[in-house]
Length: 494
Ligand SMILES: [Zn+2]
Image (cartoon, rainbow, N blue to C red; front, side, top):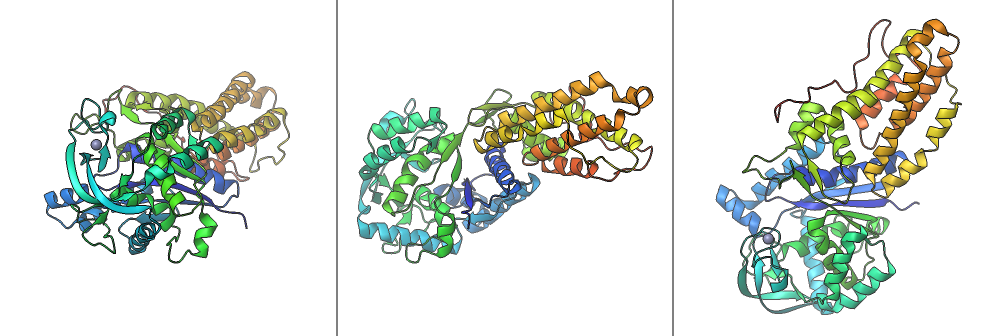
């Protein structure tokens, strides 16, 4: 049996509702998964929510509700958004799931036994929001580099994970597997971090009640990152006390998709944890960039905030998915502005694809009398078909914008051909040639409908219906546009 391509998003932390950053990673995973399914490769996409830690405890206390209820609500919001965004995931794990909690406890006990986890005392600079300790040199202006908030000096009894022991094995692994951390311009930073020297990692808390208890020492709960990272194996049935057959079907993961801010956790701590457990490492960890909005950091308080749900409600899901993966190279940082969005919507979608499509379909319906020709042989079709491999490779390399660019170049080629041949005149001047021409166009559009499927599933499906062997609409009736034109200079949010 062919091993399933096992693909994950990070577990999203339920201290706040989902935003465009979460949507981005998850849509990327969905695009790749849809592509693999469409090319008959078994794939498994796991996503979920990360629900423990002092932040959750604090937020729930402020709202005066039990932490679990807070987690249930926010976790539901993530699932609702995934539905809105057409995410076709296979499994949604929550770190409050009993199976996960038991497996984390078992992992902790196993590593205490092997000596990879030991008890000591921690003194360090702690960012409450990150739930992470920083060294002096990692701070920016004495503050947390992520939150730009002051850190606290904290001293407490703690269990430690012997991360330092894995410094050399990690460096050796990076060297032998140059594709493990991608893209390479982000990997360099991680490798330099490891080269600078790893210190053991505090992996338990005595101050945090909302966490998974250490079984042999219940005054401690497991550090939220140590708990959350394990989801990638516990979600597939891993427990060190009884490793299931199911787990062997999935592990190692083929790809962990992450945002650049958590690359270090996934590129250093996670592989070291797997080494300690004697498990294989994932084949690839890929870190993408961040979105700004209108050139600035996204922030609810300044109103510089875009909700995926709102864009989808106004312009449709496929337009949103198209824009996010066309506008920016996956990996690099990008900027979201409604102005740029509307520009692409009208030019790329309403004009280039939408107009081309309705033009051809209307001509087919008016001139081809019930049947579409079944012969794909034509020069343009052959040239187009040869692009399929290139598009597939781009998607598999996570170069989504390259794939879309190739597709839209092909669309623009078709538009040029149509403008030259003027098929609407052909019906009168050269009626013999028209069926052959429309035949060629229909076959090319069928290819395009297939190519865009992972990105724009509903548009693809609608195109396929119209490009089928039967007339989709009755005589004289015009088809609905795929993307109705929108005014470009509307006020924000309208
Ligand atoms: Zn922080």
